[in-house]
Length: 224
Image (cartoon, rainbow, N blue to C red; front, top):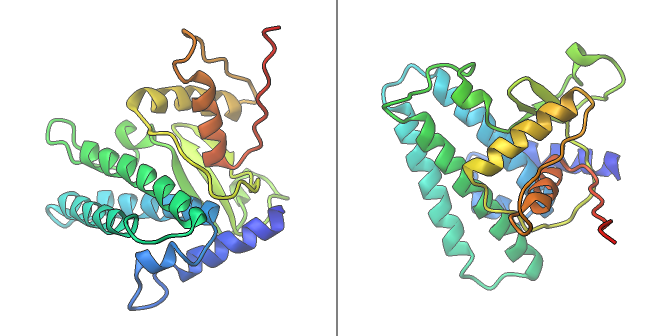
């Protein structure tokens, strides 16, 4: 399962933009939903970091315009006749893209602009990187062509658990803060226990993070 998911993710990344006449709207139909979600996040992270480091004036505004354009193309696609799997994949991707657009808006905020990839306003985001060398800085035995997730000082391996085309939560600033705590705990091999009133989304937030990281998540009710 893990080997297959690795191969599919690498194929998805290689096909993204490999063709000069590349169309993202075609690409999202040609790969499994989970690959689309993971690779889109990897590409978004890379593009945002390139934009932050760019010397071109107004680069962030230009990139934001491109994200909005991508979103409008996806919303046009959602009105077409799609298979249930394609529709599920697109809905999850649009949810992810909307959050990405909101973050880029935040990075380009005149009152709190982001000048470096080391700025906390960017470091606090959940970012995905494709590592063809296999984490040489993190010890041997991790294998090549892997994806890793980073958030603040936490670095976690993408789990390659097969999930299929899944639905995703709408991500709010509070979700991001919750995830920051959980990824920080997982990074130092500890657990995390979100607390609060019933029905506010504690379990769903943890489940959604596990989807993003492709790590197996088991939910059981032990109140009885």
